Image (cartoon, rainbow, N blue to C red):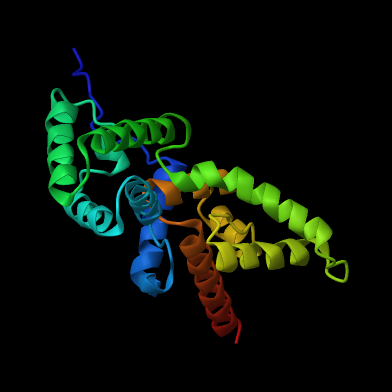
Length: 232
């Protein structure tokens, strides 16, 4: 009787996993200067909303004090606010409220903050993959379409016009919009993925689309330089 052979090989990685690894490699290779970006990673965009919410409920000193304390220990991230771990929210909400009160917030304003921030985090986690950029992106694209149509740039070809307006929206308004450039398409082709999977991979590692665009442009330039060397 022959022995049954059981395969212990690992399942093949998905296109999304491959892209996550590829983007992470780009970060290590090109080492972007993240301090030059308003929101280099998406948690910074979320933290900006947290600070605005705190400032709308109390004075600036109290808001800034509470913000620094809660972000430093990581208790106002989307992940923390939507954790389903037994007893986590009750325990951490007590800590959040203690920090708010100690920072100068009134008890009722502390409760308002907790209710609002939980609701916002749950909405993002449920509908937008836990990230503000995924929520803002459709509205940003609508804005770009309108501006590209009405800004009077008829001298430009349509792809050039859209790229111009998209870059401007990124720079002027910090809009989380992704450039569907030749570099992005080449990168996706090289890794057997599509552009939607590329966006999802960037979101998975909390990378803003602005940083992604710059990394892809650098990757494309490096590939072109390498190909030119090979052809010589």
